[in-house]
Image (cartoon, rainbow, N blue to C red; front, top):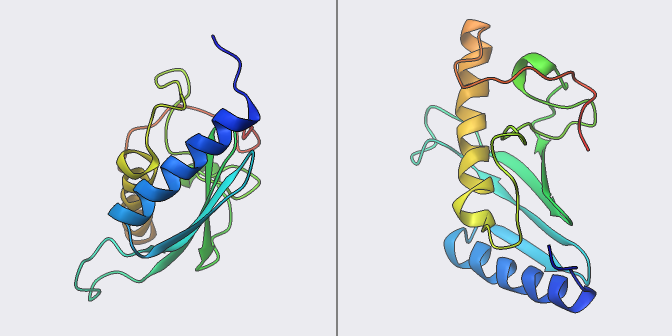
Length: 140
């Protein structure tokens, strides 16, 4: 595996920033030398009648991490959240993140799916999505 340099990481961040802004205009991103931070809103219901807006933060250094900023959600393993409040969006043993993977094609749609599953969980008490066992504390 090639070593990631600060310059290549910055280029990756600028590329990701452009793709996110193009495909998800409700997100704003700041690209730093080693980190990309995007904050935006996701509402899984296009009309906004059946779901509320969720303010989301994506922080991408070596791997992307996602937090729901609003509404405040208490972390629980049952809803696929780690103790630091970040979302569990994929099972690392089934999917290895690389710099070639695009946030707008993976992380943002997966976050929207997580929100739908969370809203269903609030109504039923059951997580309807795929699961892999993990402790609440296992976020990297």
